[in-house]
Image: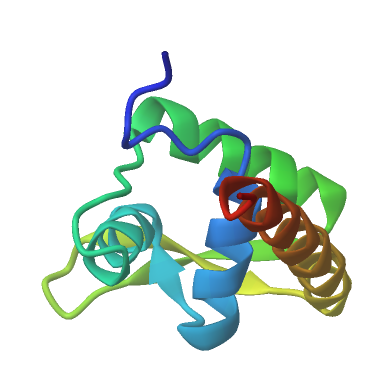
Length: 109
């Protein structure tokens, strides 16, 4: 049985959505945003997030840049690209259709 905090293939969608609303986040901030917005239900592990970020960057959905923070530490921040916005819209539409279909099954008498 899947753990209640597993993302079941939705990590790309969640990351793209977060970056569409909060551009310029670094990896840890993306993980924290997902956890906070989901009210602690969803948790992303670094071992899942960073490979996904690299893959999404290779796909052209996000772009990354190194910045130096006020503390002097360097951080890699991410932004959604135009192509990423297109991917987000398609993924969100598919996800909502699947969620609706699951809801229909769960509500059947």
